Length: 205
Ligand SMILES: Nc1nc(=O)n([C@H]2C[C@H](O)[C@@H](COP(=O)(O)O)O2)cc1CO
Image (tube, rainbow, N blue to C red; front, top):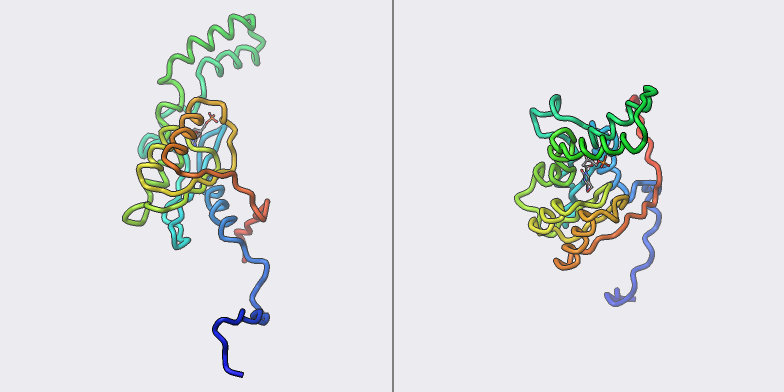
């Protein structure tokens, strides 16, 4: 019988290829998670991996201090909180209320905290890109982007955001980011991995 191009092709017979390979999306998020491991942030390590429409990785990044500033900038979340915690840890005689006041006052000293200096993972992934532009790319992030990174993602022409954690979902930064993504028609979705754990053996393969 002559070949009929309309006919549904018969299932390809098993060619012996490995079945337990990593799914592309698991790989992209794993690349973001691995990249996050490089961060020196003592509380939250964040990673980002940008993938183009051909499913090629074109940029990765993690949260870090600007080049040349690594050894000089504070990683504190709030100098006041840290100071107050230290007072308590050392059996200091400040009351909770006084300590909280100390914390609040010192927290205003933004120059003593990491937030004003740190470059977010998304910013670094964008700046690390090895392609001419990022139009139509997807960004895999371990933590939902803030408003500033959302602006970069939108302006770079990326087409979707895939995230692992949304732990700061009530913050104005995250809410503003979501508002902008919606307006710009950039969908965002929580990542559901096929593999929940990836073990890397670095001594032998
Ligand atoms: N999307 C993000 N990408 C990031 O790289 N970051 C960075 C900034 C800080 O270094 C850290 C958050 O610190 P903390 O508030 O959880 O102690 O993660 C934070 C966010 C959240 O908006």
